[in-house]
Image (cartoon, rainbow, N blue to C red):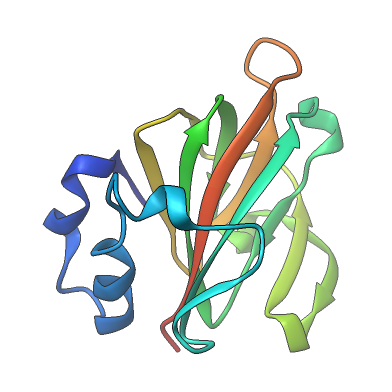
Length: 150
């Protein structure tokens, strides 16, 4: 997991070439150009999409994890609570292997608030519970990069 400010994104280069490509696009000029349709930077290896939704109570949220991709969540508007936990500490209740999606229930080890100017990188092995309310329901908009690393 990496939790940092957008302005510091390039400090994390060198972990994986596909991650480097995504980090290079966490800029004030690029982020507003990401639309609600998938934008490919390197085919299915690196792509981004914008999402807008209303945050939900913690009890309505669940953890998800991936085996082949890491996610970069970049908050554009609003704030949401996020929790991180290793999948082996959680209870799996669904999976769609073709979509690299694994769903879990349980408690998070790390808790944070993602706000504008923040980004969060969750690697395979970082189950993440997103969309949770901070102080009640709030409309949020964020960009999510999907980055293949396996």
